[in-house]
Image (cartoon, rainbow over the protein chains, first blue to last red):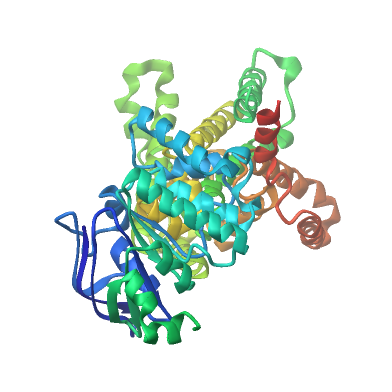
Length: 235
Length: 328
């Protein structure tokens, strides 16, 4: 279980999170919805150590992650797929996937997970020797997710997986997210602008506004909530 | 056979052949004697190859723009000269039991001291400054390079602004190209290894690299230390070639020369950078006939080349070779 208690974080003189408290149950899909600048990405960055936590604490599986260096947080099983995909564009697709298993030493396990990733994302298999920068946006997103899975995380954090991707591929990507959640029992924390889609695949949702948690409820209840509908679902 | 191994073999063959055929006036191969002018250019080319390949691991592979390479070269040059020139007699006497091999041992020791001191300087500069990125890092490394030079300039023990004279000329073609081959091998083997892929990851996307569990600071500092070590070796070779070093010889302009070699050859391509370092050394000499127009012609050539091939002379060639091998 991932647990944030009263987390305050920001950039320079700007405070982006004002005491965020949230829980992500083991094996569930939890989504953070909210407008631009609500602090969704910052929440993920604070968990993975890319942004310093000023106050409060981050706990994962009973261990404190607060302000550990990012590589140690990855080593504890929390993988972050950053916004804008951020693949290694000069490396090949295969090399990108191998980078995902960077901290692992069990060759057999890596080979098995590589098989799983290539099976889940057949497109990556076809393009294994291609330079990653030449992939389409959707393929790059699949690569970013696949690369994160190569680290065999127990918790996967996805930042805007639908950003700038053809609608058809968005659907595929979300199906894959649900699939890995079911098949690997992976805990997923999802940040998404497309609140409609996010609340459909997730079990639980948090609504963020200007760095604070506004609402927390089961996803189906949030979808039925008139205020959420008006503000985020365009109903 | 990979591009790396073929390149390495070429350089090794060249080194061995040149070591056999030249170097000493009393060489057993009088037929193969080449004149001193050409010999000097060939040695300078080797030194430049070491400088460019070592900067390439910092700028090309790891993507950290450094403008202080000449500073580390200076540390190596002065450090090694301190062993052979200032401490020369005493060390030579201490090693006299080695007989005829003693001078060579002193030279090897001086190379090692020069490289190590430069590596320590690289660590001292790298640790605080590699938290910066891009332009800021360039400015800081530029500053550190100049600080090293100014410190030497004001240290009377190593000759101050007058420089250090009477350094024995130990550097031969064989030593230079042998070390160039060693440098090329180390850098390319490092970058191709699983560990070394971290360098490329840091260059391509630092945040993603961090999210993969790469300790980016450690990688940047490692690249800096390895690069500085070889820059120090190049400096040591240079000092024992020219026999006379001044702080002015290691100014900012020297750093820029090396940066030009790396950019011209193609960032991140060891083969390209090696070719560019040789090419620029020879070009510099060929253009001597143009006298005062030399630098103008040089600059024009660079501009034209950058317009025609912005990725560098051989930028992307390693990828191309690899892709071809994958297809077949």
